[in-house]
Image 1 (cartoon, rainbow, N blue to C red):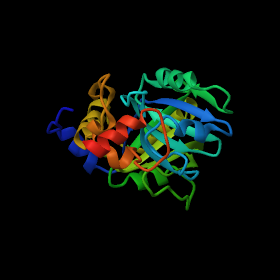
Image 2 (image 1 turned 90 degrees about the vertical axis):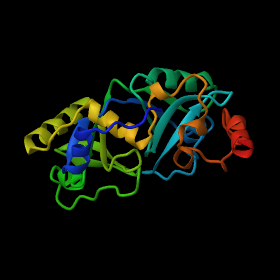
Image 3 (image 1 turned 45 degrees about the vertical axis):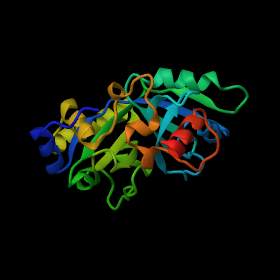
Image 4 (image 1 turned 120 degrees about the vertical axis):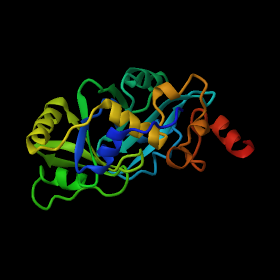
Length: 248
């Protein structure tokens, strides 16, 4: 992965209160009574231990342990939301569907229907709270999340602290995200753009698809403590991951 450049605009993004940006993502929804158990068989993190309202990073690996995608997984009342880089939704959904036989799980690429906004900076919580009902409670632990009313729209608010950012990710249908975007613009909160977000990603060592080639292994990407469980049960590609952990 390339080193972080000295980026003055990103310094401003970190330092200024409550800046926001559109954050292109792909989303795969896994719903049904077997959704958690099914997905747990194909990711490096322990999804089965997640409480509702919790989240984790994870790698999706193939049978040889090569990384197909780095995902963020949110456990919801209806199943799981798998967030990954823009353009990977269909591939991720097809990969999981390939192994779907009799399990009661529905896998849907919802990338075209769900949008996302990032609000970050020292005063991100205040900026977000100004668009919410009085005394609303925001999620506090990293990747914890809840459905909240923001600018009169129901969106999922996700606390984000581990990707070089300190703030909140807002996710929901595009109409809801558009309404929140308009409210943020009206509030005067400054907007940042893709180059500044990419500088943050590089500074944090968070890999994008450009950093993951066809033979990348999970431990090569520096997310062991956040994305890999070395104690969970079997999953596709586990033998390679466990062997690397044991033998180096």
